[in-house]
Image (cartoon, rainbow, N blue to C red):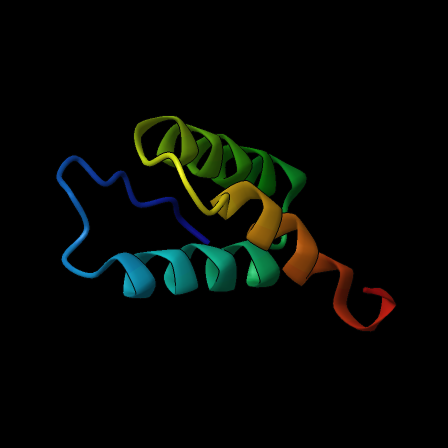
Length: 65
């Protein structure tokens, strides 16, 4: 899996958030997951409100949550 650097605002906030979570859940390497967590943290810093990092980590819990 390759990482995609987003240099401009996403066209749809919900689409972007869903896409990042999907990429995180299907990532095969810890390096990729770490990069996606960093991307989510950066997104949260520039978009206060509902935490994408919380959604990301919550989604990765699966049925445990």
